[in-house]
Length: 347
Image 1 (cartoon, rainbow, N blue to C red):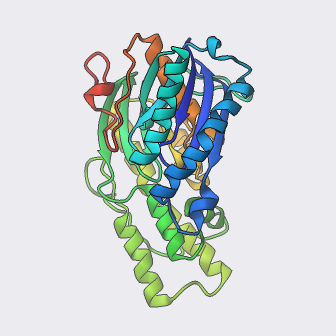
Image 2 (image 1 turned 90 degrees about the vertical axis):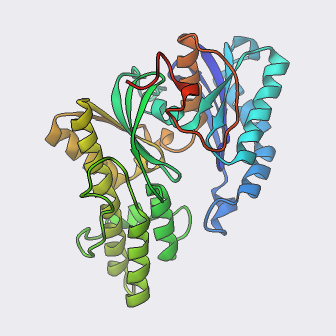
C-alpha cells in the first residue's frame, strides 16, 4: 500500500491528508463556510484567496498529525478536476512545489473518484473496506449522478442531473426560506421535526425511464408556493415545508438508485458526496437495503464532504495498480473520461 499525502482544494475546503492505502493517518480541513455564508454561496475569487492563505498551514498540520517526515512518503496527490479553476490551481501549484522540493511523484486525481473512495476509508474509529464492484450514487452540491463501478478506473455513467444537483437544490431551497448557508444541513435538521406529506412537491423525472435527474422544477415549486402563501408564519409550517422538500429529493434519489441496482444486477450501493450526510437520505437508504436485500454503504459523516483523505486513497489505489503519474487541471471533466480509465474503462 502506497503512503500518500494529498491536497484537495476544488471548491471551498482547503484539505490535506496522509493515508496508507485506505487507512487514514491524518486528515485536516480548513473550511470557508463563515467566509461565504454572508453571500449565500461560494464566491470563487474569495475561495481562491483563502486557499492561498490556508494551504501551507494545512499541509504542515497534516504532516505533523500523521507523525511523518517527507522521506516516509511514497507519493503526493492532488485534486486536478473538476472544480473552480482558481481553487484547483492553488492546490495543484502547492503540490507541484512539494513534488519539486521532495522529489516525490505527483498524481492527479478526479474529485468524484475521490468520493468513490470515501466510502472505504478506515481510521482509528473504523476499519478500511475493499474497493469492490458497486453502483455509486454520487450526490453533492455540484453533482448528482449514478455510476456503475466495476472496479478501479472502470466507471460507466448511468445518468446525471440535467440541471441542479441535489445539494444545490437543498441550498437554494434554504435560501428561499431565509435559512442561511449552507442550507442543506439546516433543512435536514428542521425536516426531522416535520411532516413529509404536508405539502405536495414534484418528483422530477421520477416516472421517466433512465437514470437522469432534475431538481430545478422542485426549486421553482417552492418559490411559487412562497410567492402565493408567503414565508412560513409558524415553526410548524416551516418544519413541514422542510420535511416535504427533503422528501421530494430523497424519493427521487432512492428510487433511481433502486432501479439502477436492478438494471446492473449489483448487490452493493454506495452513497457518497456531501448529501450522503443527509439524515433523511441515510434512513431511506437503510430501508432500501432491508427491502431489496442489498448492501448500502455510506461514508462516515467526517468523510462525506470534501476532504483530502479520499483523494489520497484514490491515488494510493492507482499507484498500487501501476498507473502513470501526472496532473492535468480541468474545470469540468467526467468521471468516465478516458484519462481515468483502466483496462478499457467501462464494464
